[in-house]
Image (cartoon, rainbow, N blue to C red; front, side, top):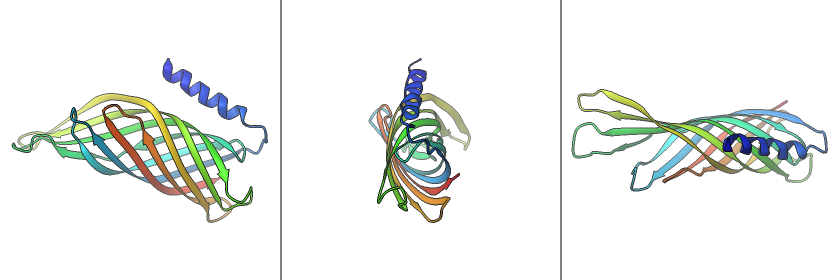
Length: 188
């Protein structure tokens, strides 16, 4: 219920900001360079390369609402270095919803837009462990749901295409998870 309430609040805030009636649709795809650092309870510390895909309704020059899919790539470690096997790969994948605030540099005709975003995510946490003898135990650690904060910039290279860079931070229990994404933004 908490997730539904938070998502509804984000949608209402974004649509309440639609006073200018200049809605623009955006979509994009990006390579995501993620970093995960677990605490002592699950000591995985690694970087991974994954994928981000998003769609956005930019309601006016200041606000938008964005939904996306994120896959972190794998974070690997050997949890039992003294024995064969034990190599473990952890990964996050799932959906997020954010309210985005824009700060156009140089006015509405600018080629650079800075933005910040706040939202929530709901990700599956998958874990694969290499067992003795070369077999793999695939499992799940369940769901992680929490706060997402981000900041970035879009540099327009044409009327409808831009290069988007984003730094995202995820509030994950017992770990630090953040990602830097670089990709292509399409405006409609």
